[in-house]
Image (cartoon, rainbow, N blue to C red):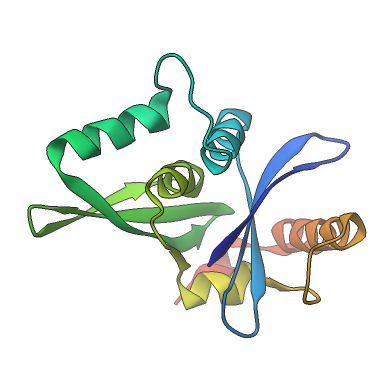
Length: 161
C-alpha cells in the first residue's frame, strides 16, 4: 500500500487516512482516524522535528535504542466498522507481532520507512476503486460518500463466516 495522506472530511472535519494499493486494481482504503494521529502522520511525512519527542517519535527512539526494526504494518481486519492492524517488529532476529490501530501504525511506519500492507479481505470489504492519478477534491468526496454508504449499510451478520 502507498500512503496517499490524511484528508479532512468536510463539514464534520473528521480526519481520514487514505491508503492505496500499489498493484492493480489500486483500490483506496479510507480509514477514519483521530486528530492527534492525523497530526502525528503529517509530522512524520514532513519529517518535522520538535524540541521534545512526541509519542510516535519516542516509540521510534525506543525501538532504535533496543536495536529493533519495524518490518511492516498490515491492516488486518475490519470489525464493526473498526479497522485493526499489526506491526511486525524484528528484535535480534526474533519476530514480534503487535496489535495496533492503523493510524498509530502508519504514524510509526512513516518514521521508520516501513512498508504498509492490507489484507485482501479488508480491501475487498472497504476498498474503493478510483480513477488513476492524483485524487481530486471531487473524487475524494465521492470516495468518502461511498465509504459512508458502506458504513451505514453494513450489519454485524455481514461479517459472519
